[in-house]
Image 1 (spheres, helix red, strand yellow):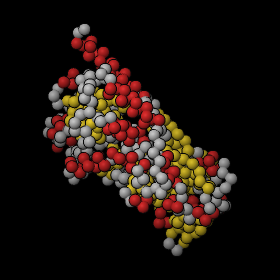
Image 2 (tube, protein in one colour; image 1 turned 60 degrees about the vertical axis):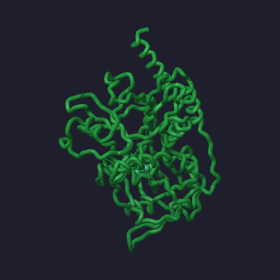
Image 3 (tube, rainbow, N blue to C red; image 1 turned 90 degrees about the vertical axis):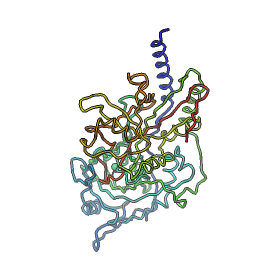
Image 4 (cartoon, helix red, strand yellow; image 1 turned 120 degrees about the horizontal axis):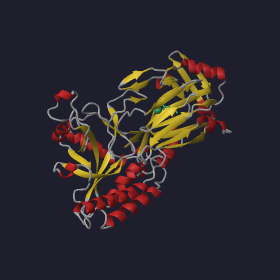
Length: 452
Ligand SMILES: O=C(O)CCC(=O)C(=O)O
Ligand SMILES: [Fe+2]
């Protein structure tokens, strides 16, 4: 057989093998939700500015009191590219900052944290080892008739922030469902979920709250409220090293079906002499995005920050890394930068790093092309295996994309993966797309020395 035919046969086989591996990764919903019955005193709300405070009970408050609460609120703002913006075409709601209210409900005395730990973070190494979750009270919001919040992600406030928690109180309302959306594994597939707080609360026979905790890099939207008052408080959720915040419950370690299926498929592949017989490199684009600083003081610090994410990878992302390492493969987290090969070229280069790098802020400060610059910063060029003609160029590493091709957006020559909109204008820490890079050794020697 001529070598070309043989090569393309192997490429086809590899593609099918990797498609099968990918098909074992079932994406779990990125949230947990429910209702919780609370004692009457938990619904007591004090609110207002210094010297002018009011008190109401959120499970019994008549409409006039809810109107008063709504009027005491300031218009809610949101963050766009580092600035706090009030724009009622994007977000229409009232807000009270945490200094302007006090609620009887105490999250740390409730079972909610354990519910979040066991439902949202069950696949997370740290949490299943009993590490803590820290909650930070963020805001009280009142969504009256016509209020809404258009699609956004929640601004990451530190590298440790992983989620957001919304609690909806009993005041009745119609509309105001929270919708969450994520990209599916199939091309163009959008998955959508609805948290319909008004329906959940209407079913309750005892005073209750409805809650939803979700990974805060997930896009979400509050649909317009058509009547009543949707009264919420929101919390930011963080990983914590504080052992006093760890669960007092025995540590359960259920294995998700996902993990088992992925492990079996991966083991099957690496045991097979038909899979990448001469070895190769795999790339897994992670489902979630993770907060990292925009830049670090040194390459070592940037590398460490990326490494520190390993035990905090969310849901299936964490399973992928864990199983790859269980199979003794050399797997590590990477950031991929996309750069146009020249100002006039449509060709994109992909350059891989062990951490976030500092990019020059002005294009003309760069000598040569953007890919050259990235390489001079210590990056490794990568290209889709078997596709690019310069695959064999010594500076380019061929890779097989198992999940997701890089979609790191490019502005002019460079762009960081920054979401420019969120619920808060803090931009010291931003969401980054992350990849897992895996070296697969040739048949019989799959594990390559140097894995960590
Ligand atoms: O109220 C909700 O359900 C979500 C609110 C929200 O997305 C936010 O405040 O950032
Ligand atoms: Fe939000």
